[in-house]
Image 1 (cartoon, helix red, strand yellow):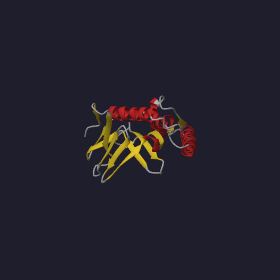
Image 2 (cartoon, one colour):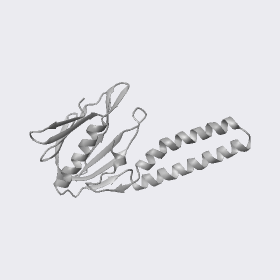
Image 3 (cartoon, one colour):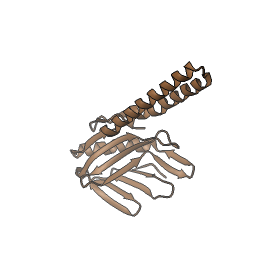
Image 4 (cartoon, helix red, strand yellow):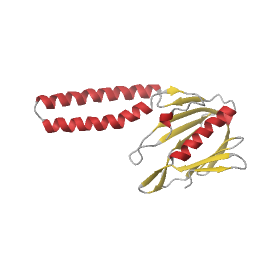
Length: 196
């Protein structure tokens, strides 16, 4: 599947991906009138003035550690999601980093050119982020207590295992938490940590 296509004669920019192996492709196009989309049998055109919000986030999955997501919300409440990866085969989820990046940058440029009032947010919601931080802190305290107990009991292999697990946990979860810190941003200052 072609990630990005540009039709030079009319200036449209498009992006397509498959969110699942058996599902239909999600197709998006930035036109002079607005954001045109087609998902399965549904299709529509959202004028840029009707786009109420854009949220960018980092959403890794087991088969694709560098997956990014954009949620676009219509003023009527409908929402479209774009992913930076696409299912290719039963075992391959391919990154479409360059196409996704170009489309997101072009979307923000179109919104700015049409004097959009869309709310631009990045990362997780503030309540979700606070809960995630609390959970990480709780798990960190529990792993530290287990490590101290293993060291006091002379269980060197157990302590080594816990130290390795803690390092892996910090690498995986730490990247997710740091990239998804909630913030607002401007059309011309897209958070670089949320673009591939």
